[in-house]
Length: 626
Image 1 (tube, rainbow, N blue to C red):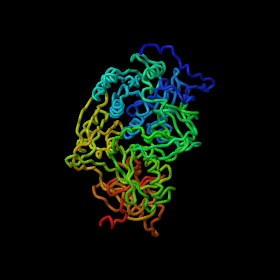
Image 2: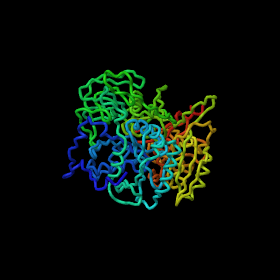
Image 3: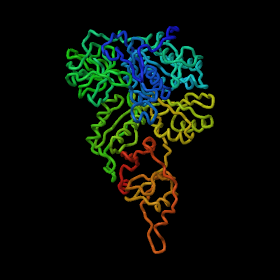
Image 4: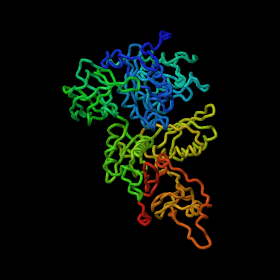
C-alpha cells in the first residue's frame, strides 16, 4: 500500500445530530460484484476482533460510541466477554459495499469459523502484538489458507508497552510457512493497530489516527466477482440462521448466482441434492451497520438473508427452481466430546423449570443441531447423546437451555474414540498452551505429565512462561479448574484439537470421594456441623436434599453416605435456638463449568433454571451397592 489513503475521510457517511446519512449501496441490494468486499475477522480468543469491528462501525457512524462490543449481542457473549456465534455487518466505504463477519476466537467454536469462511473472499488475521500467534491463530489461519484466501495481517494492541512487533511478525511469517502458504499468500499486507483506541497504521512506530488504512487494504483485496455469476439462476449457500420478530426464520448466506426478490418461487436442497421444500420468498433482508433492513432484491456476491422458508437449515442450498445441483458445503472437523441430555428425574423435578419432557428436549436439540454444524445429536434409550468440539461448547448449549426453562440430567463428558486401519484404539490429542507466572511452571509441568501430556516447548518471557503440551482431550476435563486453583487464577489456558493418536492408557483423575445424602428433607446446620469435618460441603443449611444428592467432597477416596437433614432432639434442657450458634464454612459454589469437569461416570449433573446440583445416577444407596 502507498500513502494514498492519507487525508481520505469516510465520504460515504454524513452524521448530523447522531443520524446516519442514507447509503445507496447498502439499500440497493443488487450491486456489481466488483464493488463488493466480503471479509472475515479471524483471531485467537481475546485478541481484539470484536473491538476492532466496533471501531470500524463507530467511525462509519453505524454504531453508538457508548455501546461496547456491539457485535456480541447475545447475553452469554456479553457476560463472558467472548464471541460465540459468527455475525455479519455491512458498511459502505469509498463506493464499495463491505460485508464484515466477526467470528469466534475459542477453539470449541471452530465450526463457526469453518463454515463462515465460505462466505468471504479474504480475511483479516488479528494477532496480539505481545502474545503472538496462539493455538486458535494456527487453526483459523490453516482453514483460511486451505480455502485459498489471502489474509491481511493486523498486529493488535500496539499501544501496550509489552508489544514486540518485530518478533511477532517473524512468528507469524514462520506460521505461514509451517502451514504451507503459497507465494501469493506469503506476500500479505501487515498493519499495526490498537483496537481499543481505534487506530490502524502502516508504520509500526506511528500511533493515533483512524481505521482508514484497514479499509483501504480491504478495498485493495479480492472481490467476489471471480466466484459468482450474476447471469446464472439464483443460488445461495445457507451459512447462518436468525429469527426476526416480524418475518420469523431468516436464512443468511452468500449468493453465487442470479438474484432474488420477495415473491420469487425458490426451493432448497440438502448437501446430497434432496429437495427440502419449495416456497415463495417472504422478504429479502440486508444489514445496515447492525440493523436488519428490507431489500427490494439481492444478487450474486452479496451476503444477505431470506425469510419465508420453514424447514431449510445451515449447509442447505437455496436456489431457483431450475437449479438441480446443490452448492458444495465444506466438511467440518469431527467432534471430540459427547454428553447425554435426559429428563430430570430427581425428587425435585418440576419445581423450578417449565420445560420438562423428553419431546421438548429433543425438539430443542434438533433445532440447535440444525443451526450449528459442529454439533450432532443421536437419540438413545430415554436420553439424547450430543457430540461437540469441547466442554465449553456443550456447556454454552446447556446454559442456554436452562435459561430457557429446561430441567435436564446431564452425563459426564466422554471422549469420542476412533479406530486405526490396524484396529488400534485412537484418542483425540489437543495442543495445550499455558501462559503462567514463572513460580508455577514446575507445578504445572508435573501436573500435565501425570495426565499423559507430552512436553513440546517451554518459552520463558518477561514475567511469564509459555508451556506447550500435546495432551489427551480427556485429560483436559476439569483441568482448567485445577490450574486456576494452583496458580490463583493467573494462568491463561488455550487448547486446540491436534490429531488422533494411539490410546495412552487410563488416567487418575485425582478426585476424592463424594459425600452422598442418605435421606430426603431440609438440610440442618446441626447435621452439617458433624459432616463438615469429613470434607468440603457443596450445600448450606436450609436447602433441600434428597437421597442420592451429592452434598460435598469426602476427604478420602471413597464415597460415604451421610444424613444432612438430621435434627437435634429437643429436651427440657436444650433449646432449638442454639442451632443459630453453629458456625459453618461457606459451601463451595458449583458452577456449570466446574460441575462438568468434576462429575464422574456414575454421577449426573442436575440442571435447572435456578440450581446446578450433582447427584448419583442411581439414587438409592442399596441399589448402587448392588
